[in-house]
Image (cartoon, rainbow, N blue to C red; front, side, top):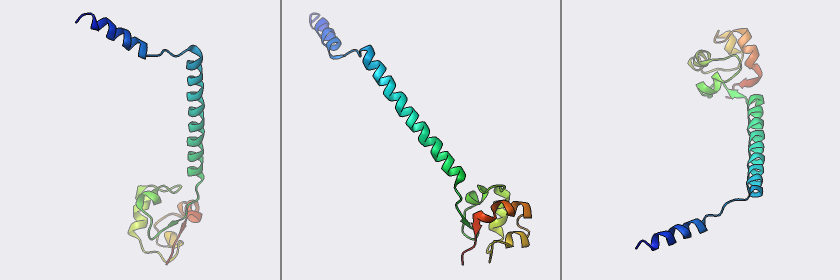
Length: 114
């Protein structure tokens, strides 16, 4: 029985192949290139997200979508939802839901569809 143990150890050692320094360098270069590509893709996605000029409908947009608009927070988004429905986007100011300054920041990012 003892004779089988050294044989098993020898076979286990044979099945495991060590990587050469050149293989390790190549694997490292491939991983670095993939990381660089992924980082560029993430940065591009963030840039597109920040510059996204998506227009929201004041009568249907979610609270989180409204709060993501420049200059608005959860409280302002809640006031918008509580003041629905809107006939036009100017009512954000005329109904005193937003200040003129807040409205100026979101005017091109909101609309009202009927």
